[in-house]
Length: 348
Image (spheres, helix red, strand yellow):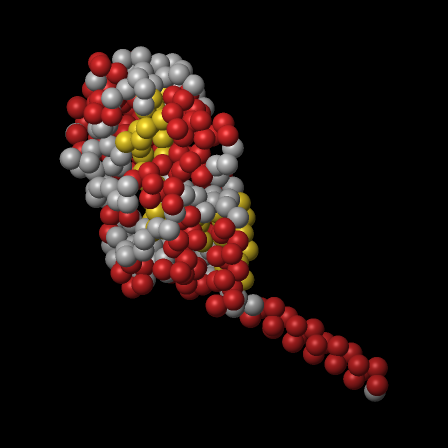
């Protein structure tokens, strides 16, 4: 009898432990963001909600490939990507679950999220923004010669331009935006002009383009704003030399405004914890989380009414700048068309 009672007690304990484990609240995150400041965000979310964050890190392309391979078996609940083109691609491939959130609809501007699905659900939301800016050699180039994207293709700038590969998502998003503004014919002529004005074949990342200007390899470059902000915030003497040598332009201040790209989030199509996933995205859009999220990569908060505390960004812009307001979803929709244009004009 005693042995039987002991076995029953042991079984009861196991069942109790299993029930507790089954009740554990989690959100499984696939993230293309790799910033130490995000750790504090996730910890604070768990403290506030009791929901544990399990994170898997990869780049945008790797995450999308993994979601496709895993299919319905995927454990992913939330997806964080760092480019509008990739967010659009994930939506187009049916990898996201459109959700309805009054909180996110209220605080995230309509142009920084996907188009509504048939039932009104939103597939992805921008959570921070960065600008695609122009840096130039302050000694050799006049600011007024590079103060619009269109002027980068002007013959006056022949042999002066450094830029990374045209097929990189950051450039595809910029080119998609310019196509939305100018129309297909003028945009293709513009891309042809960019290709003709290059100081060298595209290579390297955005930081390499900035340093190439400072080194005299070229005189003009296109970069995301956060790469320049990193250099400006650096204590490395070599970075200080670079920061002092280059000027910065937020293009098209007298027309449509500077192009913005985003880092954003979505709920995975086969999420097992969709309610927790929405809570997590709502938390990232909250005022207390937005500056942590954006400052982790020297970006601007996406939520309405939240102002950056980043000194480098304030110094770079003089406090504010005019940004374009076209829907990011339209920029993403132009990607295939833009790639075909790049092939036709010989932009590598």
